[in-house]
Length: 403
Ligand code: AMP
Ligand code: MG
View 1 (cartoon, rainbow, N blue to C red):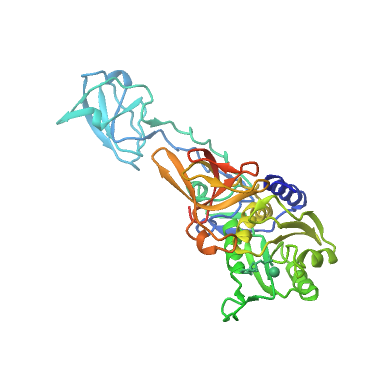
View 2: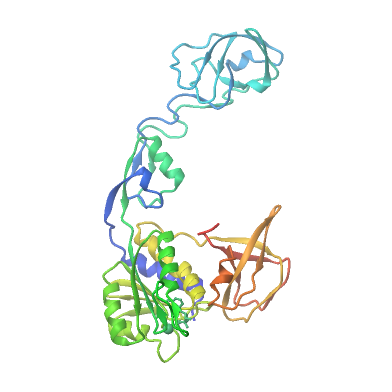
């Protein structure tokens, strides 16, 4: 059985091999958050466009600002002011953050390190050449490429595009992800379930996870545990870029997802992963489309989506697969689990001064959505560890939707 790392790499390898060019669209910077860029963005001029002061203070020749020296202040420069005249030696100019440093000035001395009486400014210490000045062109040259195809647009990237006047950006269209739940016990979320039925919560969590991952969900509803119904709905799902099924991949008599896919010519790369929850997860290609069969227990569905489906959506969005949001933490309470599987336990991680501490939450297993709603991460228990003691270092997988 594959480890989750191997299984994830398999997804990245197989989906990576088959990804073609993405359809693109021009999107306003106001609407492009989370999209993947398909064009280069270049600067329209140098950045900063002038020698820029990073402090409120006085522009000086560095040799003039010796400790105890007094210089006459002969004017002021506000941010946005046009600056054409050079600084004359033996004088200083008051200058504001973001203003252009005049020719002849070699340093800006913070106002806090000066005292002033009338026009006379007294300096407390020596000024270093270049201090508090960002030289023209030091962040980027004119015409330099600052954003490249494949980059995901977060708030910094959007601001960078806006800074250089790129107000409309060519981005990859979001991959469409078909979501199909299965199970005779499953009813629509706005129906009243019978005594032994359950509502289709997986379609809701999967749609949310697809959006988080950068895809566009196409919710296909629920298929009964019958080959014909499954086949018909899978056929529909294969019209989208990716198909994600929930349920029907375990060993039960009515777990028919794999058989239905096989009958349609699917090739499988794994049909079990050494994890809990989520062991029966299936990944294959069917009619040229990546297909994931995720176990139906809600927490299993959620964990296996994050581990295996999210990187496929990254790749089909025109980006590289993002690393899992793992970090190190100190265990606040000992845990004990069966070896042989990597466990992902709903847990809470908190900052305690300089370290993160993590504690697993009480839960009733992979159906317990209520426990997960109290968790901000999964505590990762490696497959070779039966017991981990309090104080030991562990990995946590952050729930990136809420942290
Ligand atoms: P399965 O993987 O098909 O054996 O499903 C395991 C369990 O997950 C079922 O017994 C249900 O309790 C639950 N389940 C299956 N499908 C869904 C769904 N769409 N929404 C919520 N829970 C589900
Ligand atoms: Mg089922």
